[in-house]
Image (cartoon, rainbow, N blue to C red; front, side):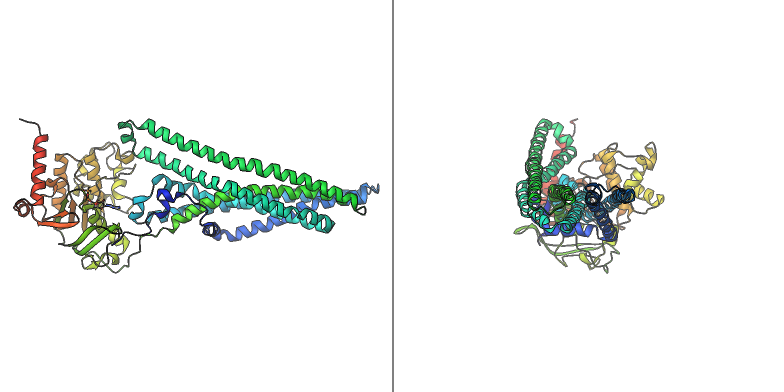
Length: 601
Ligand SMILES: Nc1ncnc2c1ncn2[C@@H]1O[C@H](COP(=O)(O)OP(=O)(O)OP(=O)(O)O)[C@@H](O)[C@H]1O
């Protein structure tokens, strides 16, 4: 059986590049993000239209003043005051409306970012484990936090400025058409020049924009990786090398930003400013040849020409932001496209905890089979140990039992129910895991055991007692409420492991899976764990992978895996009786090692 084919495609290191590929999808994502705010968006646009209309009145009122009062020396106080008052009121109302709509747009964009970020994180939490085999933490964090900001950029910076500019532009064009359509046609000749500049700009800056994003997420990835592996980094004296690598990426990021800015600096402002001057010259020249035109019209036109070029400059400049938003949205979309873990149907129930494995084959990658036709029956309440050399498939078997990867249909059943028919909540309640690395939250002992489940104090304490963790927890200065520090920094490895066992038991599982839970603890703590496991006999089905064979010596049966096949199966004494058997060799080897390590008398 092949692992989920959608495996982390979008987040594999090589797949970081190429933000342009799904522009359509990115646009849809950005559009969908504001759908719940449609009404606000429509209102904001309508009010912006009003503001632009009011602003477009200014030069017309100026023209009326020049032609009706200034040139004819006609000083009619009421008319002039009406024009001035009108211009003043129009200006004030336009400014207020514009401000209020900016606030409205910013609000809706912020709420959209909030929604999309929650959606993306919720999605990440539901992705299959196969995805995380290849995902790079820093890049993933970057997608959930930075890239989702694309929505805000689009709606506040891009859309607002663009929309505003388009409205101002249309208002000015309409006013110019009304004043003199021939002059307006001259202004229209600006359109093809603009299209040329925009396409040139796109070509120059788009790759730089995509590259900058890619490098920024690479920076995040490096920081996240270094912090996670700080102990190894320092111990292997690799900090300088990591700092140099970071500086290299940071330098490349700077260069890429520079390329983006150069495209802005050279292409946009100067070229468009030049077009503005050219246009003004043409309008004045045409005015000179068309002698019938009034001075007021020239005044209004010169005024409108600058109102045309300024929004054009703004629109073109927003293309850079638009590109960034699209690249960000495309990356978010790639992540959202990853297939979630299939939702199990709900009819299957776990009552006793009996496991039946039949002809189980599994491969992570096509053609590389890891498990070969496994057959195994695990009775409810029994204790099974799994041993085998490195890479023999122990963790894979556990991952399949945990539904981290999808086993072929029907190959694993619990209490007769195929694995994929057991509802997720019920399954997680009934199947507990104690991983090799206990993973503690920077929270109290109580919170670490409850893990957000609604458990009473009595249930938490009962679980801690069952895991033999109660005694050391009450010995901490604030008992169950003692903060354990990040990753449980203030506990010993053994104590962390006991908390992890308590956590697994707190859900009152019928099946408990342990993945080398005793490999990092001393013999004394191992005995505590062993006692805890023995106490579960008959109540909970326990399947434990163990490198340290003493942990599973007393198991009802021990499964010996060899190259993905069950090589031996039986109790400790049965397996020890197989002369030259795999288990016997493993056991004797381990005994020898322990004798060598133990201090000589
Ligand atoms: N996520 C994965 N993607 C691809 N191959 C994998 C993955 N995980 C494990 N494998 C491969 O599957 C085989 C079995 O690995 P598995 O981790 O199950 O062995 P194991 O017996 O648990 O080993 P160990 O005792 O070292 O933990 C190995 O060859 C390993 O390289």
